Length: 539
Image 1 (tube, rainbow, N blue to C red):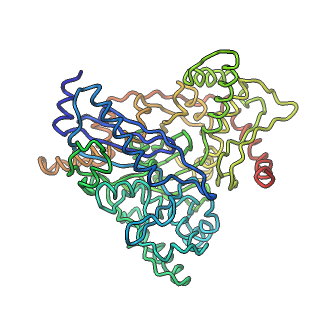
Image 2 (cartoon, rainbow, N blue to C red):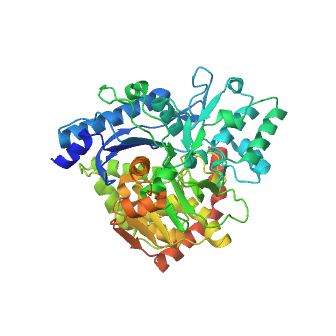
């Protein structure tokens, strides 16, 4: 047992980050150096109900309680102590989506997640109104689609927020949100750090023309900068989080953030010319821009870092879920012969074997769309595997095809940035489940983006760790201001000097044969998209 860490916990100097991911809620506790010292998890899944993807309020409440309870168990097991108070807490969640409340704080309709693609009409109209790409999953698209559909709850709505903003509100009583998460609700002015005033005015005029008097400044949560204190744990919040009753109120919270922002922090990719790719259930790339793009692109979202710098985001709804389904099928086949192999072993062997396949995956083609994929122009999911009679259908090519398919839409979006906009990037860091098998995911992404890809030894810690670091930044900034009037580190400086100065990164350069093979695959992928669209229309 580490007595130093035990004292850190008992003295209330540890910091907690909690992130609501698509399939897991993760709580990570860090010490004063920013290193993880304990964690707790809760597995969960969204449900497709009444034509929409959702999680219930009970899912959210029960999930965070279970994740925190498991964190407490980990602390008790490792350090023979318990958590009574903390130096800081931060909440992160899947960005975008729709959570609307009435004057009595009642959720008006079930939480609509980022995965829903029913907002096409709203997104198109708003993109034209703003001359700015408004994606289907953004909160303002969900709001305006409800207006277009004349949903009765619009007359009762007084507050709208994201998943992270909702949980933060439940724990602190404060309706605030970080700038990065806010930039996934509607466009943010990177000069002022507030919702874009011109677009806000235009939207409110549009609503007024439909007889609706909603005001975005009143409806959406207040935007708060990274490093600020965004509230403190209330007595009710402590009870919401910790069913043991041991956690005391009064813990300060940093602004809640989206999973894109925590991924940037966890990979130290918050400066211009840096980027990261998160690849798991969904995938997205974040490239911090030096300059504005020359025009809007439907495939590219403009959001911000947690400290308000503009970021080009390519978001794909689908990534590894179809791979998981195929690996599960193979595991089931092995069990027919009495062969018991762990999931970890099977993924590792299959991923490694994929790299023995042909560079173009033998001509095989698949679309991994469990849900709609706007970048591909597909509004519903139909997983599809296609092969021609002359394609080389073997296991290595099949697995390589699935790895390519997982990143295909990500490549389509980023090709626009690199080829059309001449965006320059010095460093791209990969993180998420796609990179668990050493070198394989890294090599595939390097081929897709034709760029060097680094994976840090801390990459497995994920967004919950990134959220904990944002809370730690708040703690140190607050303490620095009180104890040292010259403490003025920015978020990038804090990460460079205090967190990542000794972190080792493994870098893989793109292999020319892999790049050529992926390009052949993506050409066939684009040509075959009408097959996928026909499947959606007929099945």
